[in-house]
Length: 433
Image (cartoon, rainbow, N blue to C red; front, side, top):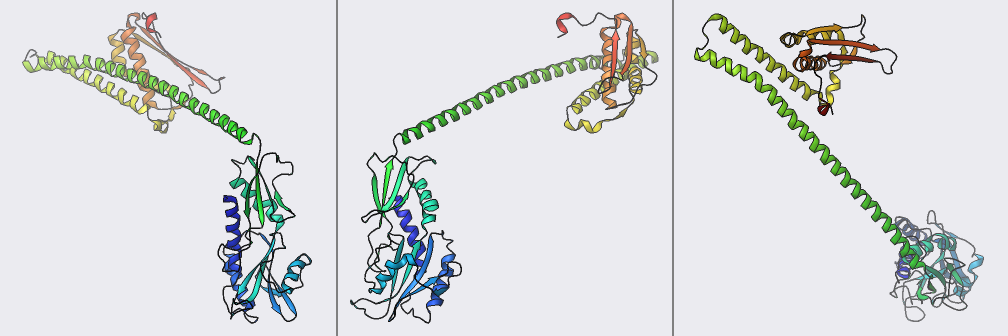
């Protein structure tokens, strides 16, 4: 029913604008009126369903044939097409009643007006004749309607045949020559020849075509089975994505937990390192405040301790700030040409107090020509100071710290290896991981 309604509504929509509604159409204004109607009709952007459109008028000499140009809408007097002989004979016999000899492909719509006609009603001023383009019907329009209304997802669930309703039946369109017609078809009539359901254009002819729909054996079951397989594949994919997302979430959670633990350990380590100089500063300050120390030498000693540990605190704050800066993505902007030899000498000088307190001999061995590298000089200096300070604090019993630099010219990219070694007890085996 939707197929038939779609076809008839579209055909009526395309035919009606080309048929005049004025009762005063005559030979003088006919060309102008039809040209204006054609210009409005073109704004609909209609499908190219018409092969030929013409206007037929009656005269004492017979029926006049005026063909309408489907490009510009102009009317021109032309000879009758050979395939329209039955229609010509119909008009020459008076043209009473709808023309039924065109198998629904060729049909006419009358234009009424003026005073009473031969049978009491208004006379026919002219008729607009339409011939459908059977090639476009069979190859484009009707296949689209079949896919839109009779099939699912581009699968041929039903086969369709359109034929003339009057005997002998002539096939207008068929979806396939090898379709299965074993099942009983579902039939529906269509093609009202461009007229609406009212009788404003004269008697409404019976629908001239018969649509027969043949359900194809197992086609729907195959379609459903294919849909199930597709849905199953989609479900598997979604479950796989959910599983992958869950695993990624678990992995990220564990990574975040490890990072949080490392941050807590870092904070605990920094707090422990800060406690020692703060304790020394607090004790020395209390002794000075309470007058425990009065002689000048002792005051200078305690003042020196306070200054020494304040500087140590400052160094630790700088290291923490440097570490925070190293985590930033824009740290690459701090890279500059760096002389490693100069950085290493500065690191040894900055840690001289720690190495002297541990009574360690510092041996710095650098090659004569150590190439420059690209990096952050301040961050490298803090890194080497940390290594040397750790060697003095934890490996000071060996009383020796060796610092060497070796350039590997053959590696790609080129590598410079810096070693800070000591002769202390080393890292216990259970801590080395």
